[in-house]
Length: 416
Ligand code: HAM
Image (cartoon, rainbow, N blue to C red; front, side, top):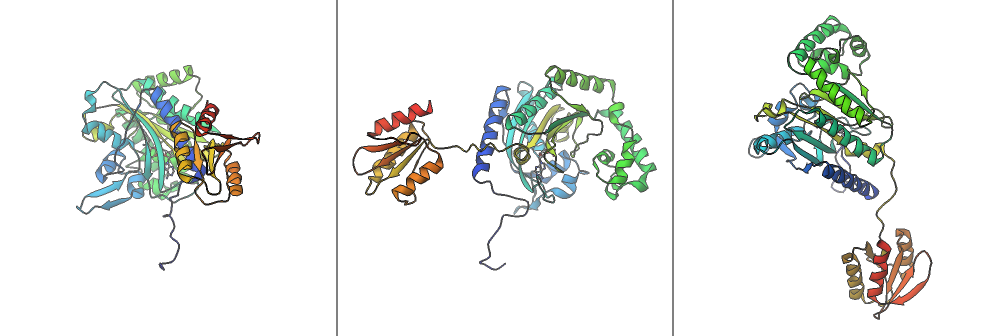
């Protein structure tokens, strides 16, 4: 590339600018409030992990591990992967720090960047952000219901439109193995109608056939047996309890035996929120139970349940509310103004909790007042040479000469 050519962000990535920044912060504020109220601690795990964590955790036969991971060797010759999802890291941390010794369940939430080498399209990126929640150390169905409710609450508060919740169970143990064999036989008998990809995964991951958009495969799974009809009694009971709790909370959902997820660790409950306004990438957030994952990563047997939702998809599915955070006061500089005094004034206003801005681009006074108007401030404080400030009410238009203290007092009164 010629040296002077303009550089662009890598394919599948984006910059968060202006109004989008405000919308993301507001979403995080909502998340913090919702999780705080439900006793979920904020947690961070590394953005890169040993590749083996995802190979073992997410599953060798998944799209994510087979073709979507950003994997590289570091200078020490270790295989490192940029995290494609958060649950494996949380479970690794739980095992590594002996968190099973803490009072159970351990509840955590997280937010941050995730990476998948996917073909970019609307709502699908190579770097995206997830907000997620995990509850480890109990298989109580109330945790399944609780996590679903928390996600529903977050999406509601964000103003997501056209939401739908699908719910199913992937069962456990012998019943699931027996079902997988039955499904394999069904697929094998109709192998010639399947997509190459589904055919190549009949052995390793037959359930993925339900997720295919290949017409032949769809016809084959349309009359396939469903795992939901083959669950072991204790898994049926667990699901019924989750449903009863959701019903009691007035949550609408659709029981959908064709719901499968793109990660291998799920047992029992799985769920997904979709939005009708999103088009092809309609999944806003989803998750489920993963009762074998911690043990699979070398920890003690530990049940767990949780979800993750895509920040970009939440924002795409919701109406921008246009409410950027507006300053209340603009400190303008008249000709020959005492700039140090003006800077002191804006600092005092901010220390008093007032959102305030000051002229920093050399505009004329007329230009500054116009700029203040565009910002939508309530008051403009024009600092001149003397100790008095000319305070203009931007709505009423009247203007008074006052001292600094009065500016701060008037501004504070606006905030309350
Ligand atoms: P997931 O369904 O793979 O689950 O991802 C969760 C959400 O992340 C999706 O619903 C979507 O909103 C967003 N997402 C995924 N890939 C992309 C992408 N390429 N671009 C934009 N957004 C994307 C998980 O990751 C599990 N860890 C969820 C979980 C937590 N299960 C149990 N605990």
